Length: 336
Image (cartoon, rainbow, N blue to C red; front, side, top):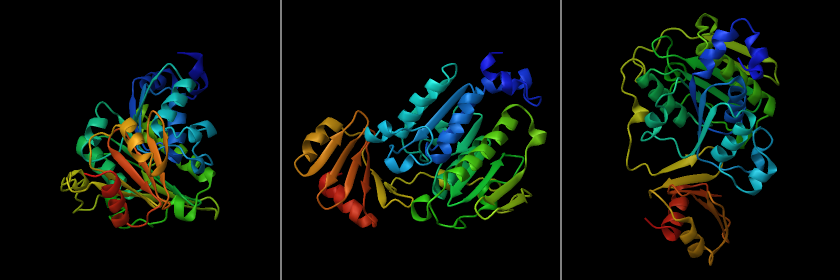
């Protein structure tokens, strides 16, 4: 085995056999923000054979405090996070395969993104997407490594179809705190801790050390020096995901063409299948300050809002607090 992994191989629970298993596994990381960048960094260095990292956003300066893969240049160039992450991860380890995909994870594409995947890792910042991942994982029988970090608090668990309850059993719809990094902040060390817990459980699973799995929902506050472990017991008898198999978040609703980005005064509208950035650069140049990159077009309006257009048809309207205002701007400037 390559000397790159020699210290990991010396760890008896992994060894040569475990390293061989790791090299043949595939992982999907949804979200290339704080959690996703740390998770992907660990897994690439550990030698996971294939990593697919999916994110809809682009790098901003406010990300650099905790999103470890990115640089000032990435923020200046407004690189999509999935693109920047893929470039950096390939520089770290050229022996494995890394695929960055710039898209919004939805009920329409999640199962396609999970094809050939052994474990799904949560790097998201909202429970709507987490419940979607939870539904898809339990439908397809793929473990889901949940993680969340906000302020100085973290929470993480590995949910395994057929072995543990699912996320919905433990954190029912509406039970989240509603706090986000954009409203109450976050310190980088708690991100590292949550990500490390996610990765170590995934490594146990991938190397067939399942007897070492924690089997709990771990929560902690590293500022207040608090930690609590809740064992994962029986599923909720009426759980619509892991018991009745209804998978409510996998039901695609054609009328849901917008989503509110958590805590960012931003609304994403996705009505079109593609947008010609060169064409929209010309159209918007007379009414906005525009900047075009190979991956997106940013248009700053005199009224204070900003539109970010992506080739896959998505438009982010930033600087708005109400969906109605975002829809008005979209209809006025982009149309149907």
